[in-house]
Length: 295
Ligand SMILES: Nc1ncnc2c1ncn2[C@@H]1O[C@H](COP(=O)(O)OP(=O)(O)OP(=O)(O)O)[C@@H](O)[C@H]1O
Ligand SMILES: [Mg+2]
Image 1: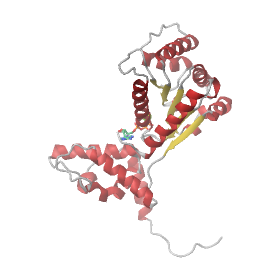
Image 2: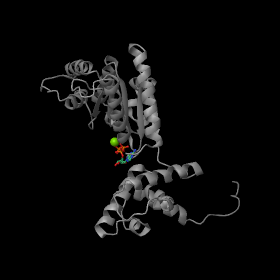
Image 3: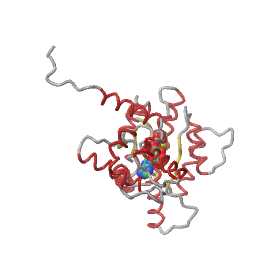
Image 4: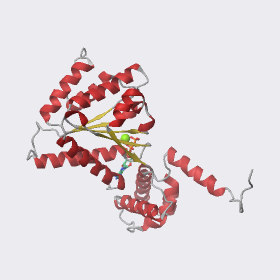
């Protein structure tokens, strides 16, 4: 895992929210929502922040190996989630048995009690876009999530695809949720400015450094950074996938290094492929010179 601009700033936001929530009483607790397209690194950032908080809390409270202490819980919301499924996801993470007749309410009670006992201070909820508030069950799920957050003395960290456009942020419930959330947008890397290009090249070199190749000259991918941006659209996920596959290819071939030829013979995922085609057509169009006619 690499420390990117996103992981750095999210770590800071979370620290501030945790400190603030620990200092103020009851209701005004703040959460953080991480939003962005698929493959931008949302889940990776959440896991990293979770790990960091877990470690820091165990050290701070001198409970390093205490299994009765769980500073962080993590749940993934399944598609088309009902309140009961939402609470089941938490119960599942905690290893709590879920009797078939349990209702969302009784499960929430049980989970809140368990999390209080475990001393949980950070609750991470991934794939939040799977809550559909325009359907009855989804609306109830969103409200269950809010009630859960209200009952528990913890900071909530959510992630999902394009959250501001989702149902979770719409309607009355959405207004309440929005008012308590700091939204962190994860965008693809750009190459528009010098600073953008430097950040992207740093990322390329960071990912290159993770590759287990015997004959690959360090930092040689710096010169391919624009080409790699064209191939991946500035997505960290697409970049990692492309370079990992290229590395596997290089190991299979026995060359143990990645160059342009090797990259060209490696496929990218469909979204990156789409971006690449768009780039290609844009570049292929001859640019018209002179001024446009006023109409
Ligand atoms: N900070 C990072 N350092 C190294 N690799 C990363 C980092 N962030 C993301 N990646 C890589 O990018 C890929 C996609 O990341 P991740 O699964 O976190 O994206 P996501 O935004 O959660 O996507 P989705 O919306 O599809 O769930 C992962 O395979 C991961 O290896
Ligand atoms: Mg994810």
